[in-house]
Image (tube, one colour):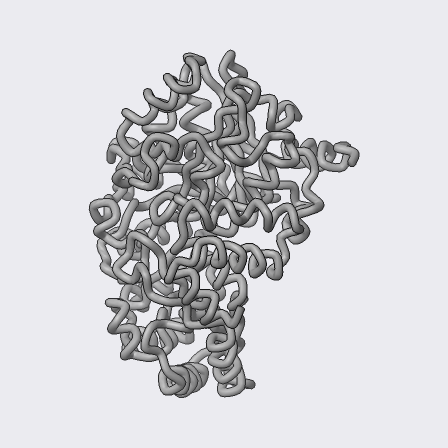
Length: 500
C-alpha cells in the first residue's frame, strides 16, 4: 500500500498547525496515539506529554497516530509513520503510547502489527524491537489489559515520571537491567516484575499545573481550540467515576490569573478542561473575561447545580448555543445511588436559564442500565424530560453503564445488551416528538465492560480480534474462547448476560 496519500495528509496538516515545537535530539521517542489525528490533537494529556518531552534537554519526540482510514475499518491501517519525519513506528528506540480508554487497545495492537513489531511483549527481542511504554487516562482505572503488549506502564499523572522513565531508557542498558531500574520508580508498573500488582496513581506537583496544549489545528475534533486546564481532579464523590475525589486527592485549582495569562493572544477559541471545570470558584469570571476579549469558549464539564442564570449568560456570551450538562441517571432514585447532586430542581433551573438566554436547546447526558434500574425508572425519565421539553428543546446523549475499576461501583454487572436496547427503545418511543434521543452502542459498551473489568488475558484476546478484522463478532468469538479456556465467574456471567 502506497504511503503517499498519508504523507500528503500529513503535509497538509503540518502546514495548518500553530504552536508546534520543532526539535531534533540524539534520543527521539515515537509518541503514539491509537486513534486518528483529530482525536490526538484534541487530547490535552497527549499534548502535555508532547510538550514535556520537547522541553527536556537532550530528547525529543515525534507524533504517530492511527491513520484516519483505519478509524472504521481497522484492516485498512497502513504503515504508521511519524508526522515530523515520516519515520516508521518501528524505527524509534522507544514507543510511548497514550491510551484514553479500553477500545483504543486494538488500535495500539494494529499500529504495532503494521509496523512489523510483535505486539506481545514476550515475542519481542531486546534491542531488535522498540521498548514500548504506555500511559494515559486508562491507567487511572485498569491498565491490566494492555500489560501483555508493553514493557512498562506509567500510572496516573505522568508529566513528571515520563521524563524520569525516558532518562533510564536513554541509557540503553540491557533489557533486564532497564526494567529493574524502571520498577524502582514510583508509579511505574512493570508487568514482568510486578505481575498484576498495580502501583498508586501518580499525582503531579501542583507547580506543574496547568496543563495546556501547544498545538492548535483546524483538523482537530476541537478545531483551532487552545486547550488549558482550570483544575485537576475532582472534589465530588460520584460512585461510578474514576476521577472522584478519592482517586487523586481531590480538586487542585489553577488561579484565574494564571489561566488567562497563558491564553495566546491569537487564540480565537479556548477550551477549559478538567473533570469539574464548573466547580472552579472563578469560572464565571474566567468565561466572561475570555468572552470580553472576543473569544469563543468551551468547557469540558458542566454540573447542573452550578449553572446559575449568570453562569449560563456567560456561556452564551462565550458562544454556547446548546447548554450541555449531565442528568446521569434516568430517575431521582438512581441519581441518589450515584451520589450525584443533579436534582430535579437543578435540571429544571438549567432549562429555564437556557430559555432565558435564548439557547437553541439543552443536551443532557445520562446512563442507562444502572444497577437496580427498572422500567419504572425509564418511565420517570420519559415523564420528566417531557416536562423539560415544554421549557426548552431537549436532546439526550445516552451511554450504557459500564462499571470501572478503582471506583465504588467496581464489579457491578453489565445490564445486558438486550436489556439496554429494550430500555432505550422504551425511552425513544416515550419521547418521540418530544426529545432527540441518541445513544452509544450497547454492544460496544459490553466490549468496553469486559475489558474494563478484565486483566491481561482479556487484553491478549484482542490480538485475535485485530487479526480477524475487529468486528463485534470477532470480540464475541475471542471472549467466548477465553471463557472456555479460563472460565472465570465474572467473564462467564458477562457472556451469559450479553446472550453470547
